[in-house]
Structures are given as structure tokens and as C-alpha cells.
Image (cartoon, rainbow, N blue to C red; front, side, top):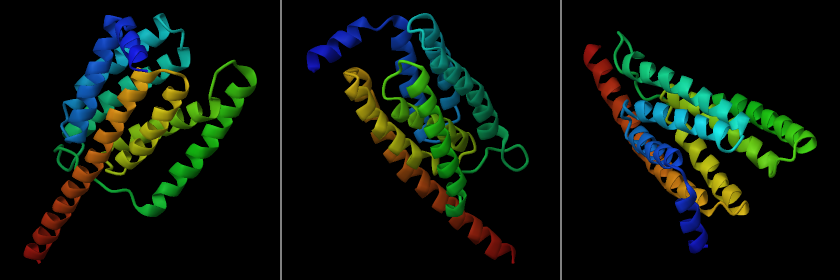
Length: 210
């Protein structure tokens, strides 16, 4: 396996390498709540879109990466000026009952996409691929709005990606997903602390004003 990981790393083009490194910068900065994560996300996703289209003929993945580029611009604006009075948007928490539409809608879409690609294309692991794709989009929408819950979604998604890439013998990308899962887990804890601190400050502020 280690020999294959090394072989996969050597086979990567400079576009793949830059996209991978900038993707790591993106997720590390996003985990820390740093608005500059979106700058690196734009670069990474733009390069991945190019690689998916030009090198691998993965046209749907290229479209998905373009979507991520657009969302990165939205995230950059919202994180920097989306708060009250054009200030930095605060970290929020999605109410538990609000998860149901995301989970139900995402599952139905994943099944529909999985069935379509299973029946009409030679794609592999269609349902797992559809699940990770659909919920990656939903998790990105939550991240753009600074909902801390997005990291719980990413932990599950990246964990599934580990198995998905491993089953396709893409061991390098499976290893990368292990790193992503660890970072997402740490981010989930850190964002919860930040949210609780902000809630405490807000309660103190309200009690003083009363």
C-alpha cells in the first residue's frame, strides 16, 4: 500500500499538488474560523475544476468544483461583512429540528442521483458517491453561513470518503481524507467553544442592558 501511495504521489501533476496543498490550507484556516480560508478555497477548487475537466474527464465533478468556487466568494463576503452592521458574521448553531429537512432532502437526492448513475452510467460506487456529493454541497451551504454544525456533517462525509477512496485503491486520497476527518473533528470542538463563549458574552451584555 505504501508503494502505491508513493506511486500515486509521484504521478500527480503540479496542478493536483497545488490544488491539494491549497485545499489543506483552506480547511485548516476554516477550522480556525479565519476568513482567508475562502481565498485558498477559490484557488484549490478552480484548479480541481480544471484538473477534473482536462485530465480526468470528470465533468460532473468539474461542475461541482465550479459551484464550490462560487460558494467560496459567497462565504468570503458573508464571513467578512455578513454580520450586523456589515461586521463579521457570528458563528451560529442550527436548531435540531432544522436538521431534518437537510437529512431527509439530502438522502432522497442521494438515492435519486445514485439510482440514475447506477442505471445509466458505468460509474462505480454510485450510491456512496452520490451521498458524499450531495451532503458535501449541503455542508458547504452550512459552512458559508457559519453554522458550526457543518463540521459534524464533514466528519461523517470525510469518513465515508476514506472508505470510498480505499475501495477504489486510491490510497493517497484515502489518507488525505483521514487528515480531513481529524481537522473537521477538531474544528467541531473549537467552533462549539467559540459559539458557547459568544452566547455567554451575549447573555452578560443583555443582563447589563436590563
